[in-house]
Length: 380
Image: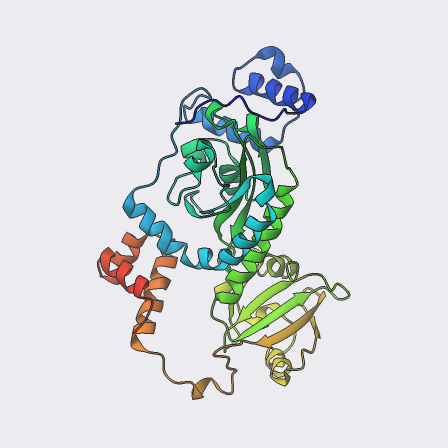
């Protein structure tokens, strides 16, 4: 449970008045305040209204509770790839924001904490309350926060103190951005939070930039035989802004980042479409030309036509480890039975959207077996 703190840095008077007017209008049903134009972000009012519709009141006391042991295990299992991809990014973030007393929180798609970095030394109790793996920080649990808002709106957000729904969360200032996996589904979010700190809305940009790095790492760590780096002709861009498209030996899409999905709309626009697509569905040229360019190993950039008539620059690269192409696929040694078994179990869990009980039912095995096999991960 939180306790009041008098050591809050002052909010600019105009901003403080705007937040106060909005709270009176929407949370206290003040008709006079409601008559004035609303000057806070619409996503905040939408979140407040959802909290009110759920029967919550701003003055209710809240506790930052952990999910059950079983749910925590499921969150850890389903977020293994996300945590692995995010680890170096979170380490960099912790160094970048150390002097501000903000810290980084990574959650899954439900808002459950799966990793934390940069918690300040001698952190205040409100910081310690939320910086724990397994704590439920969803909107349902703790009301309006950057975490709940980013997951509901699927866009980067910034919230400062009074914009949170509950009085108990007025200590926090936070920026957040949603994270999307290689198949386009939301897999979690990144939150940068400070307690009783100076307002830093520029952290919204840092959160969004960091999220792009994590999403790129998720694409790169998904098994693929060919990686195609995409950009518009004449735009070099940075590693964070280029499109990434993974292909298997037969030319099927294994995953893509947000930039590639935006460049290749409408083919890659919707979530969960990547796995069903082939390179020939995207590019108006023989897809084996991508392999030919990659096989030369000279980093050549191709100008490739799309079926829309637009053109992109593509730099195809063979996968660094275990790379193969259509001519050498047959020469690869057969996979181990244990690896195949693990892959099938992972696929069943993915198709069940993380519901381990449902995956176990489809496979005809126990949930304990699913956890054990995936934890083993095919190791000898």
